Each structure stands twice: as C-alpha cells, then as structure tokens.
Image 1 (tube, protein in one colour):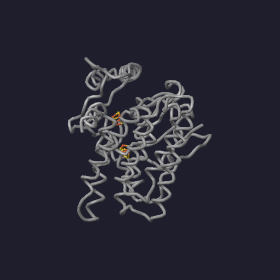
Image 2 (cartoon, rainbow, N blue to C red):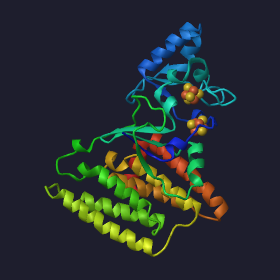
Image 3 (cartoon, helix red, strand yellow):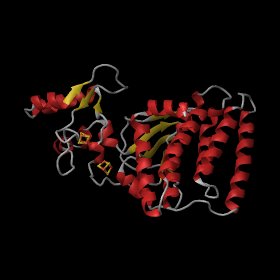
Image 4 (cartoon, protein in one colour):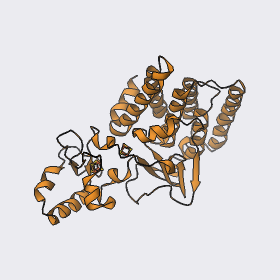
Length: 317
Ligand code: SF4
Ligand code: SF4
C-alpha cells in the first residue's frame, strides 16, 4: 500500500539546480563511494574521483561515508552550467546516491506501507502548493506515486512498537485528527497551532491504561465539536500566505513529527516554526506571500539539515 499527499504525483523537477547549489553536504554511503571509485577508474579519471569524493572523518550520520566536494561556484562538483548533473548524464539515474535520486521526495516506511511526501525546500514544490487553495489530501493507492527504491527511507513508523497502552500506539488515528485541526479554516493558522498544542498536551497527560483508546476518542470527539463550531462561524484564513502556511504544517504532520519527536516535542517544534512564519507574514499582500514562502523554505531546510539544533531551540523558546 502506498499513502501519499496528493501533490506527490504532480511534482516534476524543473532542473533549477537549487538543491545542488545549497550549502548542505551531499553525502554518499560506503557502497556509493565504491560504485563511484569503480566508475571513475573505468573511465580513466581516478584523479577526479579523489578530488570530488572526500571520505568523512569524525562524527558521521548513518549511511554517511563520504561527501561530494563543492565546485568553484559553490555548487556540487558535478553540477553543470545548464543546471544538469554530470554524474546523472554519464552514469545514469540509478548510479546516484539516495539523496540525489530522491530529493525532494520524502519516503517513509510505516506500518501502513510506504508513505511519501515532498520537501518544501524545493522551489518547484512551493510553486505547486502556493497557488493551491484546496486542502492537501492523503491518497491511498496500490501503485507507487513516483519512483521509489527499497532504500533511503527517511523515517520508520511502527506504532505497535510503542509502550503498551500508550497514546502513540494510536498514532495513525491521531495523525488524521492533527491534519483535520490544521485544515480547519474556521480558525486562524495561529489558533490551529494553539489547539494542536493543547490537544498534544491533553493526550500526553493521559496515563497508559486499558481504557486509553476510549480516552483518546473522547479528546478527539471534543475537538471535532470545536472544529465544527469554528467552521460554522465562517472562514478565518486570510489569503494565499495563510494557505501556504497551512499546507506546510500539514506536510510536517504527515512527515510524522508527532511520532518522531513525541507529542510535546512536536507541538513545541510546530509552535516555534509557526512563530517564525508569523514573523514573516507582515506588510502588504504582494510581499507577504514571498516572505512567507521564504520562511517556509528556510524552516523546511532547517528541519531537514539542522534538525537537532532546531529541536534544541524549540525546547528553549
Ligand atoms: S530544487 Fe527541486 S526543481 Fe530544482 S533541481 Fe532540485 S528537485 Fe529539481
Ligand atoms: S551529484 Fe548531481 S544530483 Fe547530486 S547534488 Fe551533485 S549535481 Fe546534484
């Protein structure tokens, strides 16, 4: 089973080269390092291999064996002037390492199957969502929405591995509820984040027990009554910048932040990101959307590439 946000099949890379020009380190695993060493030796360019692939020393993340050096312009060594990838052209798509093959796709392995969304740090993904007023929808299908291999999953989510009778054992029911809160346009975006945080706190305070399922249902039912009342009062969102913020937070929830960082940790994280986005959401309508867009991209970039520091900051705020 494949579960994905409905923007995933709509995405097509515009070859802007922005992801290959970012300041993050593009890393390869040990197998990728060996594959490239062999490829460059075969094509008589062992010297270029040694210059382009630098084994990492010191603290390394899982699957990080070497990094691809930067070229003279600061982009990836293999990024050509026309924004295409030399390695891709010469060796093919399958030769690339996981991050280069997948970005901006964000595949996760979960108890429901393979789940996929997109990273909002890609300008083409933002172009897809910034004009869209309809809420993002979760799709379930037997077919994969995009090419995904059997490796490179960014998260593993198996709620049955959670402590017995704990709240996160019901994670998937909670995820849908959190998305529903975030898409309640009867509340302003800031109000939805407040309700999310209050719900996370209430759920987090439930002691493990045989009755936990019933207790969770009670919290969720109470919230739906609130959401219905808010919707009945009319829309409180204010233009494209608000919708973009909504899509960003829905995407974060779908990325399983509440499972990965715990209810309280994720609520803190989303509130901290909400404050940054709100700080950018000022001034006239014309500049507003651009500023919110830049804040969303920066937030996503930080979540993907500097997560520990971001979580520390959110804890301290
Ligand atoms: S940033 Fe997005 S659109 Fe641009 S090259 Fe990378 S994947 Fe393609
Ligand atoms: S190897 Fe190719 S796809 Fe990967 S970052 Fe470099 S230029 Fe981009």
